[in-house]
Length: 461
Image (spheres, rainbow, N blue to C red):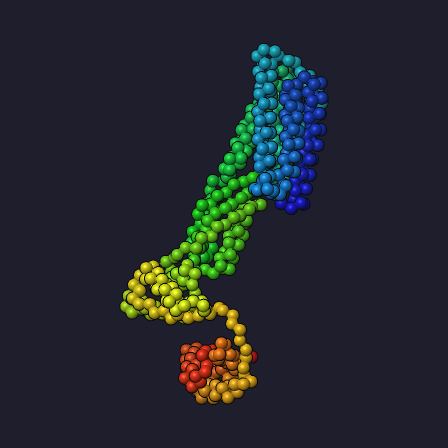
């Protein structure tokens, strides 16, 4: 939580403390002057509100501290502890009020003085409590603060209990002095009920029970809507003060690239943050095999699992049987025997994990991602370049060839070139022309060990 939000919460909490001091002193003075148990019970209630407000202020201040080595989930639980202590204070006070009320009703009747100040203090309390509870509820909702919400709940119930006290004072004014004691009992009952609800919610938070039992299902449903997510499981949600913590395991297609998988995790976080405020999310992604994988997908996954790479993977299907061809990339320093043993292991793995594979043909090749030292030798291979140009232009559909580069690698030549082709050609026709040019260069120029022909339309800029 940023510093501005933390400061706003603390300002709201300290204003509550000031208001509680004012009401406690006012009610105590008038209660002692009139002898009204209802007003004295309200004074005691406001006194507890003062303690609660002070606790809320310090709890909010501590709870907004960032996580440290000793509190890796932050300090949010201090808000919950504050709310629990407030509940205990209310229960103890209600016990004393109930005891005194029963004593006045059955054993010791007290005549109270009903005057202007009796009503004035209660009406003042209602006005102050109303404005204070609105401010606290607004801040509690904005920052999802249980401590501020507990404070707001206290002051909103004060409005109701103050109304009951007014009823007791009216009754006493007509000579029914026990009405004051009965009013105190009603106030205590209201406070006890609110204390029970608040205490239950506080204990739920301290024991990591989530407020909405359907929240887990809602999170799962939202996550499963995201393309690429196969399953969402082991969802755990806990709350500490105003902050929620969510962790889960998400199964995603194993064929999805890492970068795309990371984007999926970011999207999951965005969706959850729209559902929950001030939330910390930890997602563990697990790649799994899915039913929509092709045979080539499965082969690539087997290679990755084996720590190997391959190119030119092709699969032919004859009836219900598969014929697999691939170029296995091995390290340059490996012996033929070592590379052949790896090829046998890959072949066995493919046959064991993919059904109906009839035959596997593996061409052992060097690593394609190796960076090799080379040099461009066009200046001493002019005749070769002219022969390459002649070969390319001899094919129908070729408009021109350019950017011919001859490189020498370990005593061998590699040729790259761009061929401008008729733009009306189909992709299949263009690929066939490029392949034919490559094959003819291999046949006619024995010194060339590798050729790459890039085909592009004639009007490409």
